[in-house]
Length: 317
Ligand SMILES: O=P(O)(O)O[C@H]1O[C@H](CO)[C@@H](O)[C@H]1O
Ligand SMILES: O=c1cc[nH]c(=O)[nH]1
Image (cartoon, helix red, strand yellow):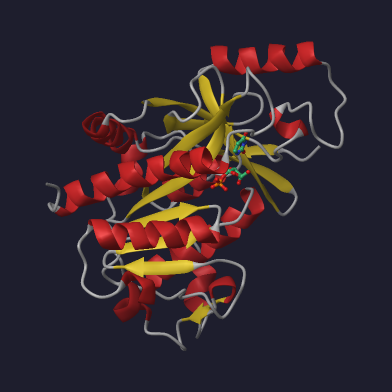
């Protein structure tokens, strides 16, 4: 078993200490200075081929979510909400040269897809954080707008994560680096979470709460589902586990929040995770709501974030 080390950047320091770097993104990699060109391969962007400061220098909000279609819809929605000039339908995918991720820029808002699971979002975040650094962006807020399975709460509830926990309900992300496991802090920005909750109270058309989010490596066995191709536990064991999770403060389960929280924290990015719950896992495993209901649920985090962005920009009515 590889040794478990705490991250050298003191994972358990109060989060604020990471947000005092004049607002710039903290890149902690001395090797990058040695590169004559940095190629962001999965974005099809690079420091020699693109003028990143002029393309992205004004970005203040980055919204990420699993699906390319959702992130395009969000871009169209935010274009309308911010009352920006031009035809939103002309918004183009900045990463069209690769089919890994989709990226749309709408005024100060960047909307990017990250695929499913920790490895996929982690690759995206490495390149996104370097992009924000190369573009000299300052005071960026990053928010994951996703879907999740709820525990003991009404489907359609929006959960704002205070801390992401692992399958053992520990507030940590274990990053394997070479032959070591480095333990990283998964706390999200508390003030930002409170601000978002405040915004949700002004919308009030759907329930919203702050709670712990459990991040797993899998949708089926990893989330205690009885309906995967493989299942080695009983119904009773499943419910015992989900009840334990609930008692530990977990209100929803998804698959990216831990590495998202850890990487954003280390790089000094103010981050939030806002996920709608598609079902109550104490009532079932299959996502059986109709298409229209699911589409409406997925819009809830978008509505909340649009309200928040407008408020921040001072364009809220
Ligand atoms: O709705 P998104 O952002 O894709 O997130 C959730 O949905 C996927 C599983 O269906 C996982 O990626 C999970 O984290
Ligand atoms: O149950 C669910 C629903 C959406 N996403 C997940 O990861 N789990």
